[in-house]
View 1 (cartoon, helix red, strand yellow):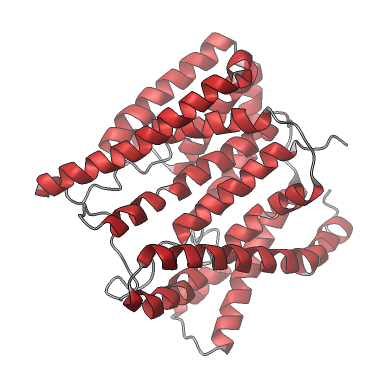
View 2 (cartoon, rainbow, N blue to C red):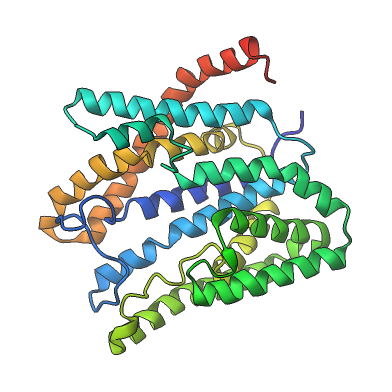
Length: 351
């Protein structure tokens, strides 16, 4: 069995950390509470501006994660049914566990929220999971298309998608040209396909990729600072600070593909890194469960923000959330998921 390149698996772990950084920002729970900061508005407060920039890292993490997954999925001719069932069951079980445990601790939830916990994918409790499942199921068919068109046609498809979604939609927003996250994932997949199949020199040019990485990082932060400056000057645009925080942001895409190229050029294998990477979606489900997100995480900021030093508390929250989700993911993997795997393989006959 071919071992996965641990450098790409390490990049997936970095992607999850970026997502956790976004989810550690105080933008959940009661908007009128002391632990909530509205990151959409231009501000003269440096801490608030930094929080807005940190909140963009999750979207970059999403792109990096999809690019890393795409790199491997481009080599697959069919979906892994066991993996599909695992994701669905893990999502359901973790949702129910949170509902039961928090109810035992005295939390009360309305009927709608209870129903949502039993239908986490259908009710979009975690948009990424449902979107990833649909994307994953489509990849074998996308591969058929990719393998049966030539370089020029794949290039043209990417150019059209770039114009529509990294151009018009990126600037106009409001789901222009019927954009949704699934279209975004497919768009990213086709970019990775073109780079992997036809841009071999670009992949290997570490110097160029480092320069593009720095350029895209400056573009990302620069666009945020410029938007903030304009928002302070023009009241009509004061609430547009997060306008560029999209899956199709060209700076995000360039940053992510450059980082992927840099990492994949170092080929090594590390069992621990690959194991932690395999827990990525479990880590996501545990730290971003809707009940934990809206009821538990805001308690921390409601308690500590009275001491100011917001950035310090956010980084403490990031560390706590990483440790919490990683430890619980390992425990879940060694217990509940181990039992699930037995049921899926032995009883349901999925391999």
